[in-house]
Length: 280
Image: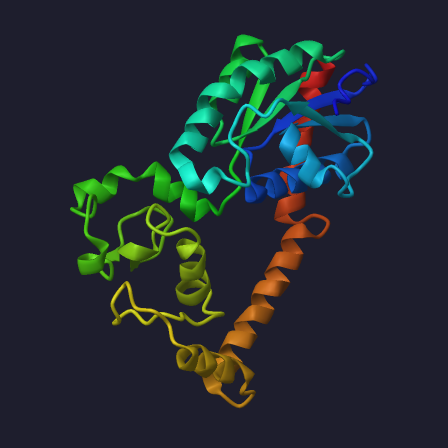
């Protein structure tokens, strides 16, 4: 399926290309839905592999967000875990050429390419075609800072490292990232930095694995049951404090996405920038 041939020519045309993974695609689609809801004359071409179109093609989306596809030039999502290195290499080497051919088929050239940060070749494509390009980071800002300052781990003797022996050592020198265990950094374990935010920064959750236990410790059903009981106990003081902080965070988040909030302000500023490129 390719909707690239029936595009009107009077709209602000944006091409969005996510990294081919569920979390990345969902995040990019959420951004595109925001852009579509804030600007009536925007048309977004959302680029997927043919396989991924089969996965999500029937999901609801705004009328001004349209799918376009490149061939399945990467391993299937169903088997990629068997060779993750080969999967990543295919993304970095096989997708650029068909993406350029897709751009050649578009009746209206885009004013902007929004590309997942993990697809650096998409930015190069935009530069070669003199098309503005924006890099979209789909993860928390603290994870970005971690990757940006990865060299600090080596400078502080924390990379390479044996996590079984030293995983509980603290890392307190990454800008924008509060003191955290070495094992909780994202290059070691997916999702761990998010759990660190929840437990240690926001204080609205409990860690299943205690800091003093071995890294390879398997959590027992009794330990999980104890945490659940703690959450369910309305008289528990720690639980009361977590619920109070959760209400505060909810209020802050609602304020950010409300009219005049920081999220809407940033989206509007981004759209103004796109619009200026379209008008000129």
